[in-house]
Length: 189
Image (cartoon, rainbow, N blue to C red; front, side):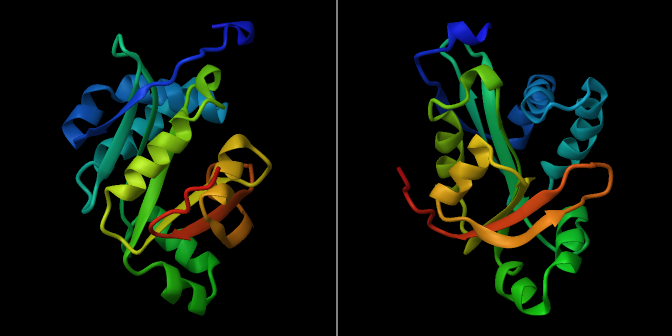
């Protein structure tokens, strides 16, 4: 879709089980690669991790679908616990006080992505707020590229604060911001 053909309608957001997410993994990883501007092989690698994540405690997933069933966005995460890759890296990046304050009873938003041609019309916000409303945790944590993007502005608008900035995860040359929000999220705009 050319940028001149921006969609004018949104998508419906559905809660998905791990099994439903697994059946649409290829579609989701296509969105991941496009939204993050990664090389195609990165989606294959990320799918391996995502398939493991569906079995993690507290797994929750949302999908943004057009009327014809086309997947245009998704988000998922799980309860963050010691021994998980992201949790342990972030734990080491935080001060002791921040780690104690934020890592207990927290949901790790592992991925939240919308196809570029569907960004800016509220689908990401729908995915984020639906996920946050459906989990029993005290906080939601995430990492996002550390620069001014629509996603970063969305997170700020819904109450996310800095936990760590300019963090370098293994395997990615871009700096990331680690953010956290107390639940329920702010409504924002």
